[in-house]
Length: 303
Image (cartoon, rainbow, N blue to C red; front, side, top):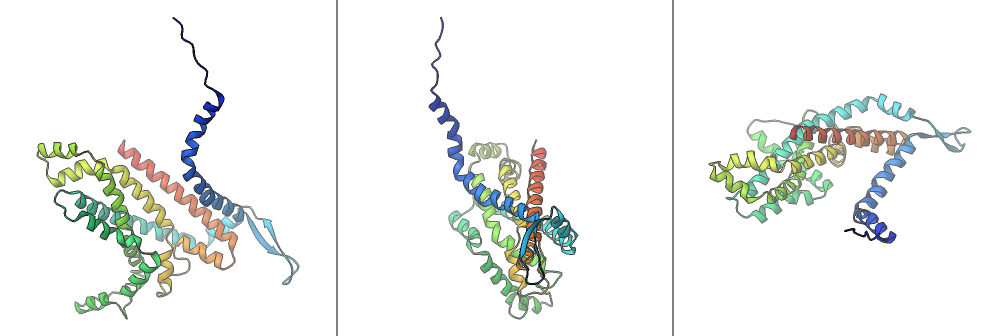
C-alpha cells in the first residue's frame, strides 16, 4: 500500500520559517537598536580621531587612526588601576550579595516563614529606589559630620572614616549590596517555587532536616538561577558608575577614573571621544569574555 505525500504550500512553509523570528522580535529589535548598534558605532568611533588643520582657527576633520586609541587607553595609568579595583570589588561583593540573597530566598521558602508577601516586598523595595537617591542616602550615613552611625561607633571608641581611601570601595559595595540583594533574592525565590514539592517530602521521609533539605536538594535544583544572578552581578560590576559618581562629590578618595565606566565618562566629558569609545569597547569585550568564561566554568562544574 502506498501513501501519497501532500506537498506543503510555499506560503505555509514560509510562515513556519518566519514564526520563530516573530516570537523573538520583541527581544531582537531592542537588542539590535540599543546594544549592537551603539557598540558598533563606538567601535567605528574608536578607530577614528578628530584633527584640527590650519592652526587654532582651522577646520576639524575625522581621520582613520587604526588601533592607536586602544594603545593610548591601555597605556594610561588609570586603566590597570580601575580594572584591578572592579576585579577586587567583584571577588568580594558578588559572593557576599548572592549568599545573602540565597539565604533570604531559602528563609522565605521555608515552611515556618510567615508574612511572605510582606517580606518579599520589604526585601525588594531597595531595588525600586533610584540609584542616585540610594547613593545620596548612604552618603549621608557615611559622612562623619552628619552620620548617626559614625556617632554611634565613636561612643564605643571605634573611629572609622567610611569615606576614606581604605574604606570607600567597601562603602560603595555596601550600597550596591543593599540595592540589588532583594532583586537577586526574588529571582532565586521564583526558582524555588518551581521545585517539586515531592522532593522535599521525600527528603523529610528519609530523615533530612530543614538545613539538609535546603543545601542538598533545593540549592542544586535552583543552580541555574544562581548562575544567572552571578552573570547579572558580574555585568553590573563592570558597569559600576552611579555610586562612584555620587560619592565623588563628597569624597576625594573617588577620582574621575575610579572605575572603567567612570573613566570612559570622564574621557568623553573632556572631549576625548575616541579614547572614551575605545575604553567602552574594551569594557564591553571584557564583560562578554568574563561572562562567557563564568558560564563555561559553572557549566563544567555542574556536568
